[in-house]
Length: 163
Image (cartoon, rainbow, N blue to C red; front, side, top):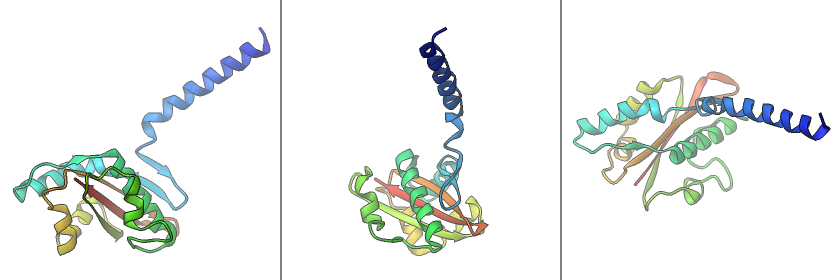
């Protein structure tokens, strides 16, 4: 067996092993700030119920918006503060510049020791956040959180909504 054949086999084995892990990559990963948890799929039924009970159409999960949400949650966890703007080039408008929004987008943020049901309840009881969640023109959303590296029980939540 030649050295080239052995190298090709190693590459094939290593590549196959890496591909086997791909299905698990989106659930939870470790970022520079803390654990990154994508919650759009888990939040979709709850959000659909909220919109339906307010006589609004369904809103669908969107992977690109979910990524925008967890990026913002990561920025907040890294900065140790909840804010729509966590530094130069990190304003909502700047961050959404490369995301398809179809002309309209909004963001809900939260920080605390809360689960999905609690964060949705908090947002629904806040006039500005509620308005974002019940905006009829929004058809897609992404949701996630990043844990605080200094206190893993503390979560930085972000939801991004778009038309």
